[in-house]
Structures are given as C-alpha cells and as structure tokens.
Image: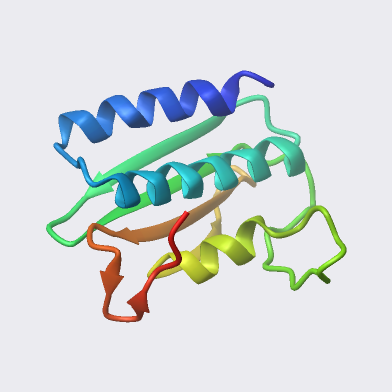
Length: 130
C-alpha cells in the first residue's frame, strides 16, 4: 500500500497530460487533493482495494476515491490545533476545492469526492498557492 499514492499520482499526471491540463497551480491542486483522499482511504479503511476516478467538465475536475469498507470509520473534516501534526487533509481539501463530500455505498464502502476548478480563481475566491 505504501506505493499506492505515488502510483496514483503518476497515473493522474498522465491523465492530466491527456486532458491538456497544463496550468501548474491547477495540476498541483488536483494532485494534492487526490493524494489526500487516497491517503485517507488507505489509512482509515480496512479495504484491500481502493479505486480513483477523475472526470473533467468545462470548468472543473471531479475526483472520487472509493474504498471497499471494512471499518466503521466515517470520513469527516477535523479542525486540528496548530500543534497537531495530523488531521489536516480534509480541512485542506475543503478550503481549496469548490466542494467536497462523501457517500456510503452498497458495498459498505465509502466514496469521498472533491471538485477542483480548472481556474485557480474560482467563484469562491482565489485559492491558496503552494
């Protein structure tokens, strides 16, 4: 599982290239969001299989990460103190993306999704730079 996130990022880079999404800040945000969602699925689910899906529309990229369940843990946004080293992933996703959410699936798994704008100055305001 330790190689899963880098492999997922490499496949996402190839997809971004195929979609001709070249803006560095947009690519960075998509890859960061994908990494956070995949890492959470690996760390907090008991699933042996995790799947990712990227879909593009004219204005945004929709990212979904699905785990096969295996644990009662529910994905939730935390509000960590400044001294905490963990627990910032979904907070970062929530602040950087247009929207995000989760849904439980019929296989007892969980799908966590996020929508990333193709322009870093989205209607909600300019996003933080890396």
